[in-house]
Length: 356
Image 1 (tube, rainbow, N blue to C red):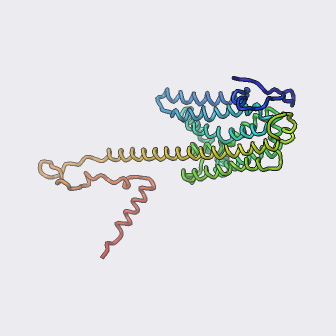
Image 2 (spheres, rainbow, N blue to C red; image 1 turned 180 degrees about the horizontal axis):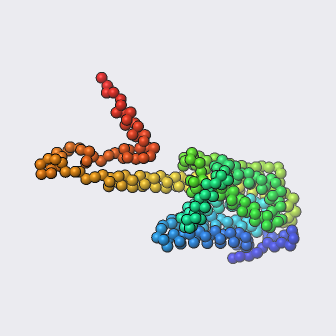
């Protein structure tokens, strides 16, 4: 049920009834800007999936579900639910709203792997342009793990402890910009960690990523902790001027909001870490399958044993190993680092003189 419970005339907000659990579930408002963003992103993603399937290529259903339900669904919930209706009379709905856009929505969007999908379905010139943009200096700097993690923390602290947030409460256009700012800041860290290997430096392997995700979960709790314990009220004049007549005091409201930010950040950090391990497992399984494929191809290229010079073209004596029927070990033909190490180790072993 879609209801408009909040209305504005200049900067005057009509009195809202007390926020109860029932009202929290059935109170909604339309946010045109957020709706346009969700429709555009959702339509582009679905178009890409349909285009792939028409070409006979597979795209995991779980990725589509994550992008639509967790990613875009969180955007809708954060910008159009009771959180958006009551965010101008209570601080804690605004705090929850912002942390959903900053942490949860980016994880859902990243699990959908939109960059890989775009590179597969776009025409070759556009796909090459996208890859070039992702490998550019500006993008690589912004997505550098330590930089992007600090940007998330700095974004939230900057919003709450500068005039940014208080101004956004009274200027609708700036409020929409703040939503987009939070979403983009979260994506800069999450997208490379889950799907964008080309955006990360070579040293950022999956074990390193898992460690960085764990540290990011700790960093993400900092804004909530600062908000909850700060003696400075966030947009205190604005919220003190709202004559609610119900609900917590301005001070308690801010403490509730900070506590909610910490709780959600830690929960998201755990889910993010689980998602990171799932992606790690999938990558290892894909590497193993590729190695098996290469070994099978090597075996197929081994020539059949040639006829020997023995009478009647008989083969070599039973059990005799010749160059023709010998199957070479995988490390002798593997071009990678592991194969080279095996070959070097074998050379060193053969060069070792036998014991007296």
